[in-house]
Image 1 (cartoon, rainbow, N blue to C red):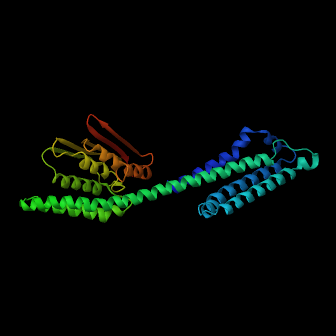
Image 2 (image 1 turned 180 degrees about the vertical axis):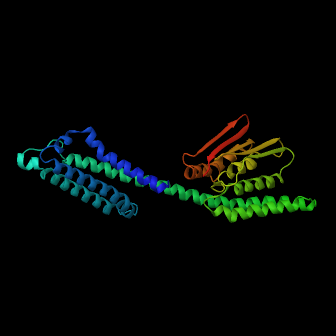
Image 3 (image 1 turned 90 degrees about the vertical axis):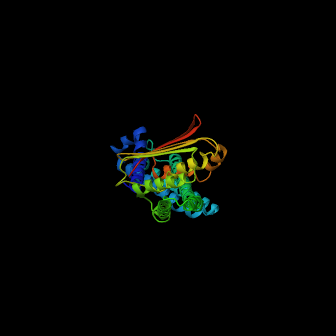
Amino acid sequence: MSKKIQVLFLHILVWIQFLVLPLIFFPKPMEIYHGEGGESFFIGYVLTNLFLIFIFYFNYLFAIPKLYFKHFYYGYGGVILGIFILSILIALFTKTAHPHHLFLDREPPNSPVVGSMIIRLVIVLVASFGLKIYQRWRQTEIEKANVELSYLKAQINPHFLFNTLNGIYALAVKKSDDTAGAIVKLSSIMRYVINDAKEEYVSLDKELKYVSDYIDLQKMRLNKNVLVSFNQEGNPIGKRIVPMLFVSFIENAFKYGVSTEDESVIEVEQIIFRNELTIKVRNSIFNLKEMDKRENGIGIENSRLRLEQCYPGKHELKIEEKEGFFNVLLKIELK
């Protein structure tokens, strides 16, 4: 079921509750349905609620985005005032038009009156305003994440390219047989970042191949004090994933978990079981203050936000520092 259909069903469910709950908790109007004037009361009740539903979407789709968000506060205030005046007139009409009031000279029990109309109108306006504000906040967060992702890609290319070219140069000077393979891996990575990573979803095997090549090329610049372990289990064929979703965790491991003097450990494990991808990253802790700054930028926090946007309720992320190691456990339910 698409997200739009889910939102539509949610709106329908909320409005059904809005219409039915007053009749459940205040059942006296039901007595009128079976007596004189019941049909008129029912029509008034339905028309009043249809008016409130109209006001909700008028405020949500037009008044707020066209007036309030564009800083026409006086215009927006005037519209709201007009809505209240119109609502009071409708409430008075539905009250005086009731047959019990006209012919028996008394007010029907629990008939729509001005007070209840205003209360329900306030609820509708506050709900539409709150929903629109939340929607705009979420959209702002999405746009922010997209900007950060673009910036992240731009930063990966020159930084990674510089280090990798230095590594390849060192291999070439030594006339190593690994030189050609390193160039192929670098070419594959650049092709993926420039072409494939622009798509909303990519095949999982391409994403994992990118990670594998990334780790292999990073290992070229490391000395023997750094122990790198990389393991992959399961079949990625036929599965898709949002590109460059978890590479920040691996990137951080190489940037902030490596020491030129002390022994360092970096362990990366990728497990595919049915439709679930599990990523485990474990690395020694060095330069922790620099890492904290990175989290507040385009690294881990960016990945957190993208996971919440792309896989809401379908991922699990645990990050902890334990016994001198930084541990990341990520589980994603793949589409």
